[in-house]
Image 1: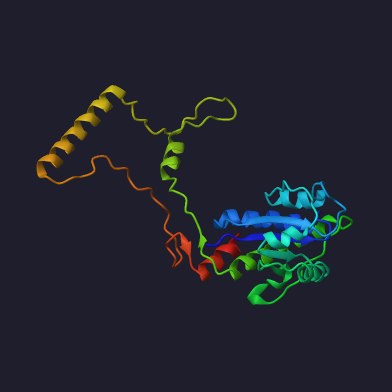
Image 2: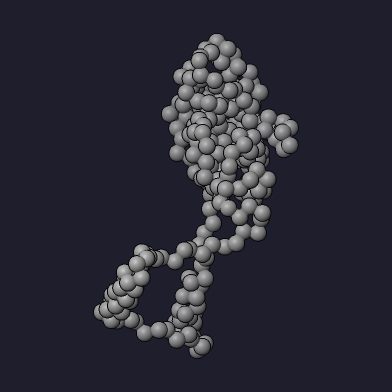
Length: 260
């Protein structure tokens, strides 16, 4: 997988572009994609400021955060980033003028985020402004997130989905803990599971050494090298989809992104 560098650009870098940056970073973590993502603005109105309060609040409602400080778009961005993604049509037209005037040897693509819609068709993204109400930011969040998903799918990359180990042992341990009633604070009269006595560390070490010595002796006498100490492989939940590996195909990757 090639390393990509993406820059989201809006007019003031205070509303839509920092939101798109935080959303794309969240999707990258969930899909194990290692790209560099940043955002900037065409104007110098908000240099050094934090994103708008409604933008940050919308991100917090979905468990996201942004540590971005607003900055202005420069010519060096055309030479550094692979994709420069405009958040609306006005920004897209101005970025095309920038790319024509300061064309470099690096192939930098200027794109519109709204062009990545369902089935490859363009869609619409609500324009944001500091004067708009919170419901406009909430509606734009879902629109930007869907476009970011389709942008990832357009790159034809392998999405990796990690499966967590089974928690059956943790569940059995939680059942063995005594429950206390809220009124008296005393242990309840429910049937408790009997806990195994704490093993003696000295005896366990002796047994382990004796078992290891027996296995090593048998392996030496048989003339075949065997690995004496082995760790059991972790148990994973079975995946119900056709892709049982961690790398998903394009179809299963699309289903996984839709579930995020």
